[in-house]
Image (cartoon, rainbow, N blue to C red; front, side, top):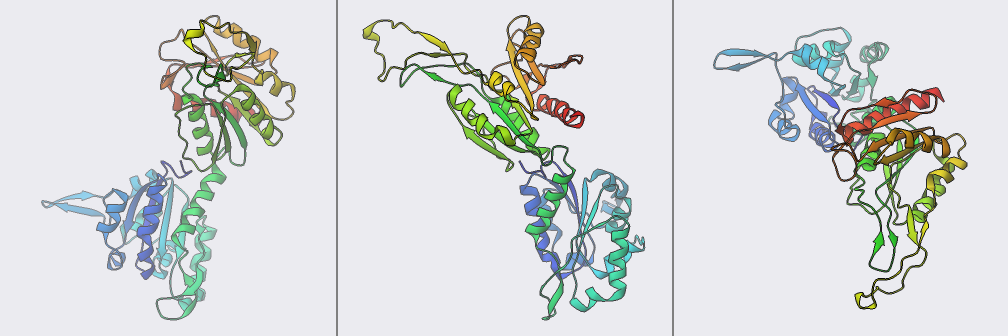
Amino acid sequence: MSILHDKRILLGISGSIAAYKTPTIARLLVKAGAKVQVVMTDAAKGFVTPLTLSTLTYLEVLTSFTQEDNDNAVWNNHVSLGLWADVMLVAPASANTLAKMATAAADNLLLATYLSAKCPVFFAPAMDLDMHKHPANQDNINRLVANGNILIPATSGPLASGLEGEGRMEEPEQIVAILEDYFKSKSPLSGKKIVITAGPTYEPIDPVRFIGNHSSGKMGYALANAAAQQGADVILISGPTAGNITHPNVSVVAVTTAAQMLAACMDVYTNTDALIMAAAVADFQPTEKAQQKIKKQAGIPSLSLAPTPDILSKLGEGKKNQILIGFALETQDALANAQKKLASKNLDAIVVNSLADDGAGFGHDTNKISFLQTNKEAVHYTLKSKQEVALDVMDHLKTMFDES
């Protein structure tokens, strides 16, 4: 998912020929998962229709303070709109609208909403080059910036007048990229490199059969999505699962065996800020792998087992400045066993859950965890969706970064 997923964006459109670009802005934002509410001036409707924008945003476009329905006026609450948004984007911002924003005029819904906005406001000027460079217009732009608004500068290029110069509104793709960069900079895990393991490992007996477990990988994938949504660059090292990652900040490394998972972790370990080891690694592997499928007719084979590499121990031994968080799935004495694992493997924290709890463990969309750290009280959570559990783990990780 994009960093814009579930972000609430007010798109204010004023009267400028550059309004023809706004359907593309709306489409890109919606495609990224944002909720887009368009507020436009009457003048803007001469350049782009509300029907086009409502079709792209799936929300009714707002153009006036009231809506008339059978002679009963319904108020479009500009105060509520200003409180609703995570960001307001005024694009295009005409010279007229810029002047009214700078002087607190409120003679249309867009301006009243701007004055009510509690969120950051971005504005993208669009006008002819002489209008753009006029001292009065530049004073208005500078005043808006001084008041804390964020300027998306006009670019140079062909203008509607036939002239060429500065005054052209920035392109939709770049405007959306600027919003993405803003949210990344405000994200609590922005700039952090996080490795997460997920799913089972399979240890082959022969070309057909393997030793494994019932892990679905859902918890690890939820952790990867949560970390990426909060700005982290994530490497997800995944055993065989049906999981799917679409967030551009997540790189997936597919592995099958414990040895492959260990090698993948070691490849990126030195440049990692944190590792969250949510994979259910198989504890044993056959000492020998049959080169051909073992036939029933040959009778029941003798299977000799050896331990798989202890990934957590090896990472704990080599740990320097990284934060290392393990997972423990237990069937009995969950907290006691997790405490031992926390100490013996040199972990910074461990997430423990028990198959004895209904709705927790393999295959479920929910989980019930406790979060343990050295020299701290254990934090116990109720049964939650794995997406919510992932957010709880991210909250702990942010605190650990702050304290490190």
